[in-house]
Picture 1: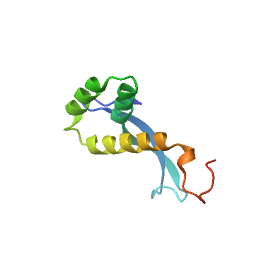
Picture 2: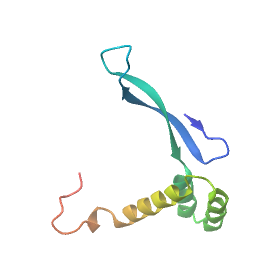
Picture 3: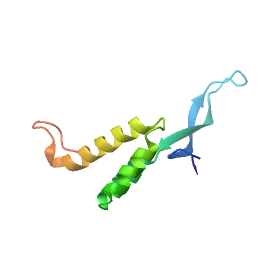
Length: 96
């Protein structure tokens, strides 16, 4: 795991199933995966009441390729947390 340089990302490793010509069996191979940390950072700042700092951080990250995805995730997680399990529609199964 490493922090992306010049971009608010955490880069980690996952594995994926691969089929290669050198073996008849599938094998696992490592694959890098980027995960934006901007939604976590903004959520933390907003939760602590630092809206001005969160706004500056968001403006500074607005040109990064993952910016819109980060805002979408921040909105989703905020709405999901606000709604909670008590806001499930009638007739839906209870959350596990």
